[in-house]
Image 1: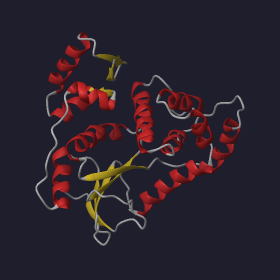
Image 2: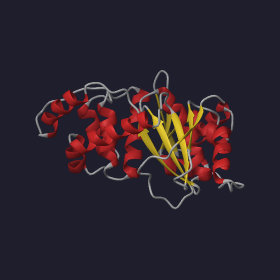
Image 3: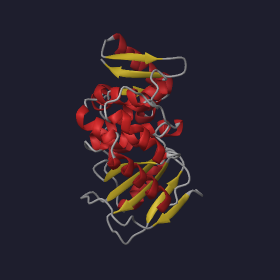
Image 4: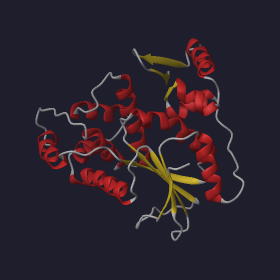
Length: 268
């Protein structure tokens, strides 16, 4: 595999009691990030007792300073909406200021709207609505969205991307608990088994796999899933996955959300 490199650990690594930390570099609205999601989720379900993780947003950046000035009108309460391709990334960082789980919920919801094309996720007003839908503190989010802190958090992600020489997204960098050891950068997307093998090599012992939840339990954790995610997580054919999902839809356990090109399933 040509796209694996050794890297030094970041100067300020997260403190963790788990032996491995994953830095997951994504452009949140890129289809490749959607394709990576089921692999990350399966790793979490089976091996999260071994690792912590964080998303690093590696969105192409343009005119962030001018955007910051334009957003001041929005955060001050003026009745104006702006649209910019960097806004979703800043909104995700603003959501993360309310906690890692809040940021993850927000990122997932933004990606769902982007996939379904039912809401312009580059719109400031729509990103505020999404925050309300996922139950964020709206007063706090509105202030954070237009704040220097959210912009700096995003710029910090871009700095980490440059520092680790990540020139392809998605990419994952694996670090173990020994700060002197080099990290392992895997550029691009590979099969689940590749990441599982790398995790095994980083741990240095036989991995203990946690049993996968039932499909119903999976929806309780993630709420909205694509057919391909179900197929990837359970290592089954997409036709089999769709049949299982339709069965649960008939049982009124889940709903189907669809457009011309995308089908998602949601807990009812």
